[in-house]
Length: 382
Image (cartoon, rainbow, N blue to C red; front, top):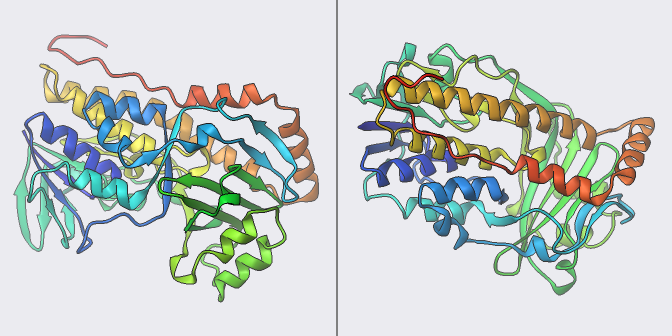
């Protein structure tokens, strides 16, 4: 089958690798001149690796990640350092941390030479017709996969767009080399309308993120100074992490999710994947994981002996049901974590302190479950 994929992010590349390994003729279109990940670190839970293993990519991704989080105390804290929820070492869910650029490079290395066409703007055709147009030239495929992000143009072309929503907060990200006192504890610290997260990466590096409630499009001016003013009085090692990160290494993005999920992930011979299908806030750490689940589910369903329509309908049924829960859960978690008023912050902190550590671990484990889809065969009813 000839398959065109719009977008060379994590979801698009995982889909390309999985489909290509099954013998499909795959072309990936990427608008940037040099395909590469924009971002710093990320975490992948057991569900992502179950999906990767199912399409033969698990070891490729494990090779560029690490699992130090499982050996560290983690949870949520107050800016003073007081723990709200504390998970002892070895008690948390299975999770690996990676640098986005290294994951992206590993996935690119898994593809045949010439698979990715960079520096081109690919346009999907209305109605899900399996045609991609680049610079006035159109190419027909058997299937087009749109992995073109939260502001997916393909989603609009296929009549599936319900808009995006500003979540109410902006986020900075950075990576710095570890010092010995950094590598003791990890997790998130919650203040009033502000959060700071610490995640260890391979090779003695740390990924951190800082989140502030802010008006959409705010110009912060001297951003390092803003971060030090807002977080410089928080517990160690937060000030040291900020000091160790050069201004050139800072990334900041306002946070968006889909205002509503599309009525379908499929239009004709077009399929939405990853953020194009279900962009969610990062508050459950499942954005990349869900894109990977999408990619693996699609690849596995296309291995079946059934008609393409049946496989696409099953993909739509499985992925919308799964993503809807996490999209809603991520939005709710963000509202809780970004509580700003004194009353809301106090109520949130009481609630968090009352939660047994085991409850938080069990909730995370439920999120991190993925079930391999069953193949769809001709005449099979659902």
